[in-house]
Length: 191
Length: 322
Image (cartoon, rainbow over all chains, first blue to last red; front, side, top):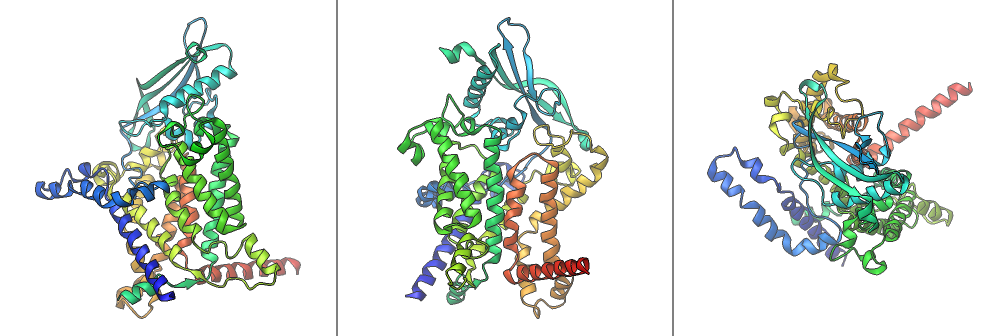
């Protein structure tokens, strides 16, 4: 009986390791194999479909445990275009926006602890060319909170300024261009 | 061959290493969760739209708790509280077999409510069930204390396979991260600029970007070291094997053992993650990874280190008393 259990466990662990290895085949394979010789690259590009078909029977179990991948592209690319969050609000007069928070701006630190908390930062920090699905709801919920705390504001705006990382560790340079702009009006929320 | 494979996964060892991992992981996760309360963002992160950004609460199918209790900010808060309480009990080793699985459940459900997370969340979701299935609560825990008080013998050994899996997982994270790195910034073509660039990112830099430009050459060395460290991760198993088999590996094996390559590799990892924790505002990631590092240390090594530290401490206290 004991020998049987040992064998089942070893088999189970082997299966987990094998599936983990397959789940670790990189999702961004097209980018990785771009410089490869064409026949080899074409072969590698078949991997994602193969990976999906191998993992499909086990996906429901893994999904229940919140496990979706063994692919870890951590800090794969740095430098180039990065972003800086601006949080602004405007009162009834309709004049210019008041800057409440801006990343690395010691004079504008409204809600800074929360905005720099990693679970919030992940929501609004763009990853190359996309931003998280939670970003629109986040902006609405954040605006709702600001309206509750600051009766004078009628509009809240979140946007991400594109910045260029300077060479040789000299920091970044603002570009003056903004992306992912969201404007939330008090009237819309109270409707 | 198969019998040896089966026997390998059936090995047992002293529980101290896994228990240390339990405590460190628990402390790191607890601190991360409590920060959500300190910054008053629990409904903002896990509450359903339009009150929060937890769009998973409105998804179909919704997380189990949401299906039972309904989508609300209160459900998100309740789940967070469940995670905090179970994490505290997990860390202290109170009813470990139960509380560890409750923590696994809470973490999965929290991720269901707010699917946006970073790599450490994914890594913990993979490793927490392994820890829960392990004997990590066997020592340095309230359970062990109660067992002792009732006069029951302590657990001298627990299955070693959970620790082996933690090690394999960490090594794979490094390999996967290493070979996917963009050669433009992580390699010679980009002048090994990657770490210098990260320190200039306004969302992640802990200090004013550009304020350490005079250290730039060191960041280039750090980038190169990071790549060597990550891509050499599979070799850790070779260094370990050579250490465990003193007569093997010929002259090469002797050099590896004498130079303590395994320990140099581990020290590099600790330095790398400490550097990340010091210079970047990315929260749990470096602490969470470092919390898993004791898994690399074999229980006899850990116990020997603890015995050495205890004797040094006693020596100091004796000197002071004298």
